[in-house]
Each structure stands twice: as C-alpha cells, then as structure tokens.
Image (cartoon, rainbow, N blue to C red; front, side, top):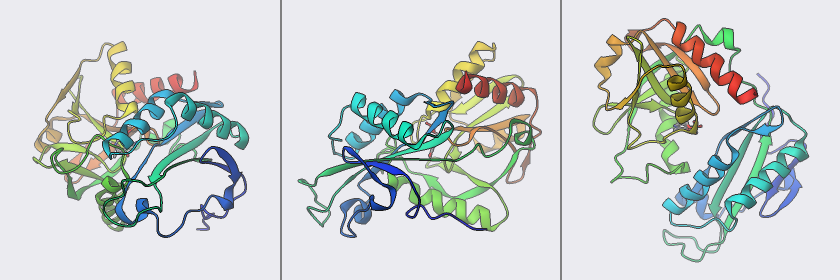
Length: 290
Ligand code: PMP
C-alpha cells in the first residue's frame, strides 16, 4: 500500500494566523506539546463544501485547551473563519479538517507557564470509511486492553492528544488480531466507547448509550440522539455493564470520521445490523449532506 506522507503534500495549512505552504508547516523538536502532550485537537468533516457543526467543534477546541490550562489566542469566531478560509483554499468539497493547538518551545519542562500557544488547521481528503450499503455488514470490535480513566485521573472531557495514547495501543492490538477497532470499558468496568467513536446499543427498540462522564460526549453522538428521538425512538443514557451486549439486537458507533457505523461483533457477542442502523445511517447521511 503506498501512503502519501502527511508532511509531503501539496497545498496550504493555516498556521498561527496565515496560510503557509503545506511542507513548511513545521515545529521544532523541543516543543512542549510533543514532550508533555500539551496538545488538543478536533476532527471535522466537510460535506458539499460546508463544515458540519463547525462552531460546535471550534467551541470544543477552545474548551479542551482550557481543560489543559491554556488559552488559544483566537476566538471561536476567528477559528471558524480560519477553518472556512482553509477549506476554501484547498478547494475540496468533501474533506476532513484537523485543527490542533499546542504549547510551543519557550519552556522545556513539566511547567510551561509562559509558552506561546499555537494553532494550525489542515484539511485533506478522507472519504467515508464505507458506503451506506457496505456499512451494513458491520465492523468487528475486539475488547481493548485499556480502560478509560476516571475524571479524577485525567481531564477526560478534553479532546487532548494525551488521552489517545491508550487508544492507539488498543487499536493496534485489535488490528493485529484482525479486528477493525477496539471497544474500551471505563474505569468502573462499564461500556465506554471505541478508540475514536461513541457507542450505541439497540435493545428491543430502545437506544442505550453510555453516560459520557469519563470520555468525549461526541458531537455526532448528540446529533444521532436527536435523529433517533425525531423518529420516535426512545434514548436511554446510563452506565451499561458489558453483559448487556447479550440483550442487544443491533450495535453501532458514531463519530465525525466514523459517521454512523454498524457493529457486527464485539468480542464474544454477535449482532446483525438491521432497521435501526439502516434508518440512522440514512438519516445522518441526509442531514450532513442536506
Ligand atoms: N470518542 C473519541 C475518543 C473520539 O476521538 C471521537 C472523535 N472525535 C468521538 C468519541 C466522537 O466525537 P465526535 O462525534 O464529536 O466526532
């Protein structure tokens, strides 16, 4: 498989206030964000030239930085405008957007009180993982070897780079075992989420989804809850023990990148994506492209 490296592409990246040539968007090796994970990011999708839920994402980016103790030197409105400018400059009508903010190189140690805060926004083409039809086969999830930490152990409501350490470890193990992704439990042993997407179970016509008290309350998750309610499907947010997977007829994941992705397997449990998955895949597709 030939991979186009992310540091060697044509185009532009928005970097600290201006569009710069893609290959010039570089940082020094002595960057606090790289050593101490003082970095937060977003993942957004562009559909028909428009970023879906742009302001919600910009707001979450600012909030994530605040939870890590730093302030992005741009307002939500300025981040929105910079994002639109970058999308426009790429000319892509369907794409993925990655804003990232981090502490710079002024101080190299745990404490970094006077570091400059940087912001970059890159846009690239990243088609949906699957067509709506192919999705209905359902993906296979392994059990993750790591659990989501408690809010007393990490700033779990932040989309912080450091929280993805256990996600990469979990996804690598799952892929090595032939699965597409891993399902993580939380610190108490309840179902939490996949490594980059939230979880829903369909039990006798009712949607059940874990209460997001130690992981990201996804923007797609909230969108899908609204879509389900609009269809008259009740939604229950609760702490879900893993054994409840035995009661579920359908299971699916939600996320900006994953969109609505039906699940066919979690460890020892099997599901057949059916009417509820098909309806929500279609509703989400119609909404984002509408
Ligand atoms: N959990 C994790 C760990 C994620 O990385 C993501 C993707 N941002 C989500 C959940 C889903 O969030 P959203 O729907 O806002 O993309």
